[in-house]
Image (cartoon, rainbow, N blue to C red; front, side, top):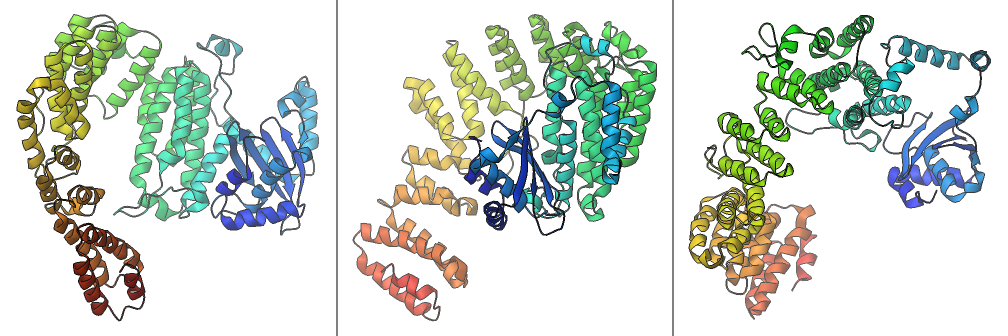
Amino acid sequence: MSSLSEKDIQARASAQSFAKGQGYYRNGYVSDVVRRGDVVTAVVEGSEYEPYQVQITLDETGVADANCTCPYDWGGDCKHIVAVLLTLVHQAEAVVEKPELETVLDGLTETQLRRVLLNLVAGRPELMAALEREVEWLQKRPAIATSAALSASAPGPSIAAVDEAAVRREISKDFRAAGQPHGRGYDYYDYDDDGTGVDLEEILRPHLDKVESLLADGQAEAAASLLVTIIDTYADGLNELDEWVYEESDYQFEEMTSELAEWLAEVLLSLELSPEEQEEWLAQIESWEGDVGEMELAVTAVTQGWDYPPLVAVLQGHITDKGAWEGEAPDYADQLAGARLRILERQGRFQEYIYLAEAEGETSLYVNMLARAGQVEQALAEARQLLTNAHEYLALAQVLAGQGEMAAALEIGESGLAVPEPARDEFGLRAGSDSGKGALAVWLRDQAEQAGRPSLALQAAKIAFQHSCRLADYQAVERLAGDDWSVVKLELLPTLVSRTYGGEAIDIFLYEGMLMEAMKKIDASSYLYFGGELTKVIAATQEKYPDWGIQKYRQLAERIMGGGKAKDYDTAVSYLRQARDIYLQHQRQDEWRAYLGGLLTTHQRKYKLVPMLREIR
């Protein structure tokens, strides 16, 4: 176990669990340690008559998953898991290597397998119950990729199978932790004005990412099987949550159900379903809806498929103002269109993609695919008519650049700079959502410079700076302006003075030696007053304007001492030490001693503070 160390084990457990686990390991409580492939099982003696069963899954980085039959659920690995992991690290010779279960069962006939299973559960009611649960779970799933022909026809390379049992365990464990603040070492809570909520993104995102990877590799059947596991376990988790947890996070559950429905729609549209399979899936979706909420998007995907007449017409280029719908489009129309477009893209059906994106009003996707399909002039013409913000112009410019159409990319990027954007508010921020013009300007600046278009690069650089007010963007304008910098600089500085929010201007003021402006910016903003910018400005100004820095540090310290915040006295003394150093730098020792003496008199009854003050005489 070279990839696992005692330090790694300690990081996975609380200090108490690690200490107890060390004791269990040293006392020889661990036995029957068996490794089958990446899975290690062991028996650990505990406080109960029956020993605890531990199962650990390993990967190239160390421990991928660890479970124990003990009831511990208070953060990190339990002491039994710790003891087994220590055995793996320090007593590798105690680990018995055995072949994986698939290897053991390989070659057995159906009759032999049946006999093994019956003998195994005989007289073992707990195993019989587990077997019944697995059978029930399998029977309620729709038929997915059961025929060899379907599996053989799946495009793309074969990839490693997904351990769906491990997925169920992990999601179930995380849902259990969601009912306990700081449970099992995870932070599944959003602490906000609305209270505490479950972080479904944290729980489900890794598994949904795997679904996406399977689809990208052409493994639609495997993606469907995994997604069924995810939704099943998600539904079970919701049913087991305490009511207060659900109420605090209801908006998240609605959003996640909507996203799961979209993934399900994409998966099912990627399969060739027979009428019987469609009925099975509709029954399954109806069953899920009773637990997780409405999934009408997925229902529509199954019932329409790819044979829905309005959709067929659109894919053939017959586009009307109704798009791909007979009547009024539902609220989830954009999600369904997105799923279909991703499938068409994966299948290389670019002209159909273009037709559907145009019909469904997905203008950015539409013009981007025109460019990717080599229809550059049409893409440019459509973009000028349809695109509404700089994000979209940047996306198209990047596509064009990727296609080797750099002249067109620069042209569309320059057009994007002219797109109107919201005015700034009182804090110098853009009202509403970010238009993306700053990101477009940075990209265009760099690309235009590389392409030998200095005038365009300078134009974009100035806009990039006006959006960010960052020193790096300021210096980029300086470099591109060359001999004209003294004139161009006068265009930029008013932007810094007018913005009353954020500390970006501080670095530029200090870069230009504009110390008075930097100090005024600090004085005008409480946000900057308590940020790291204050220390930065004091360091730059203490030689020329020592009294300003001394006053700031004294104010910060006196606010703490005067408020009686004993736990923060060390912070106050740190501020005073900084003030003292400025006094001494200017040979003003007498002033410092007089000021410190006054503090000792004022706070003489604060037994914790006085010794700390005396240390900085």
